[in-house]
Length: 463
Image (tube, rainbow, N blue to C red; front, side, top):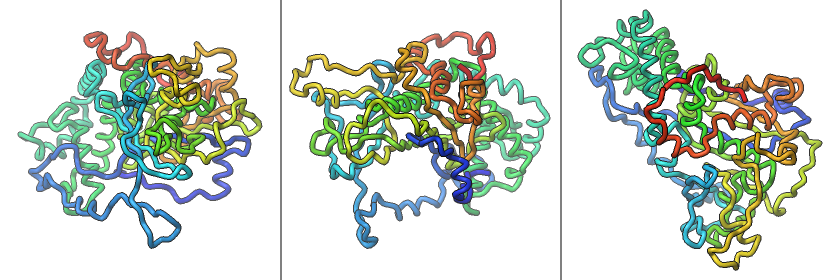
């Protein structure tokens, strides 16, 4: 209940059904929640629960080592590139670079075995989770929906049931409420964290009452995620930036132009990031995130109805397929092996790779020609040729091994024939375009005191 337990390995028959023969898997982007942890804040010390937990000694057993060869007796340190991501002109992610276009500080690795690239952002630029701490308008909307949840739930029989169990442990013996101290969601956080660990860090047994946990989960999901169901602005500010990144990587993978993150994760070790390390395609991208990220993504796509709060180690896999019969009009950039992936990739047009192709010796202030790509361009602004490029490509979402349904993909022509869970890439992009911000920071600072709720319901998961 607290941590996702993976299913048994798939059989060959199950895999053949899961992956139709007429489709080829081209790109997988995975959002993954961290594993078990201590509570966000120390709570319920009066139950005997200690504020500091004795589980960090195990961290001393871990180090950044990898197997360097097939000789199991030899190990090497993990080598990787670290890059900083920020916003580009179209609000898509772009790698921060130095005055000479440098992406990297120090790196070392052979070209035929490129280092994994770990991309991070500053807190002010982070969109891998709903960033209410750096988005003033989103913080305003979040409070409004939380207050509405409090009005709906605080005087209900369900809340009375929680108070009957927990009031004696609450500060000042106050009743439990959505907005109590701690909040219902804070109580859930401590329950889940203690439930995931050993007997040294447990609450009294009433905290694990099944009915109480079901009530808490239901209230928490509504308080934190109902806004994504009802408000396009909530979706745009809370998770639209990340979903825009995910979708534009898909179109970059279709176009083979580097917008899939190839340029951002590539780089020859001896070239300070201006070259490439042998990669030709991005096949796998991994992004570490939080429970609020996963539920926000799924709810914004209309695919989280009836789901519980995401447990520890939950994940979403966004899979991009193409029909095998389709031949791409653009060949890969080289015959070198594809990249295995990155811990976070970005999709902005390259800053220096195009410079090397179109004349790296030109003056630094001379304009560099850049290709016309789809990237974050809305579906309605695409040329007929660009829309045609998206044909025969499909997107599927899997959440903790469960295939999810985007409601807007059920309509005729919006999915793979015979399976509505395979959205056409065109339909998927059209849905995400509706809540992809054009300028996230500007939107975060705008309309701060405007109405919190839309005049009419704006359902998620439709174009």
